[in-house]
Image (cartoon, rainbow, N blue to C red; front, side, top):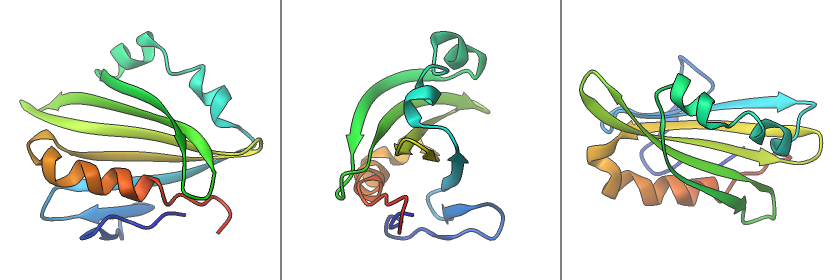
Length: 126
């Protein structure tokens, strides 16, 4: 579904990839019979507040092969440490690939550009 960033390996604990040294993870889920525009309706300030997420950025996505979607970037605090979390929704009229990407904010300069490159490789119909 996507080319993982350098250093990420397939996880044996969840559907996705993990980078042990960075404490970073990419969790992937396919949401069938739903397009990302319908999912966007649930991405409200109330949702962010209930999940203790601070919105940093929201932007439209078009991958290298033309798949459209949305990218949300958040911060949150867990055990007094700040993390970055991306929610990426990409797909077509019928299906949406949902990525939940999390890493410690103190590694943002090393991880963020690799994550963004990986997002560009999404292909829901490989």
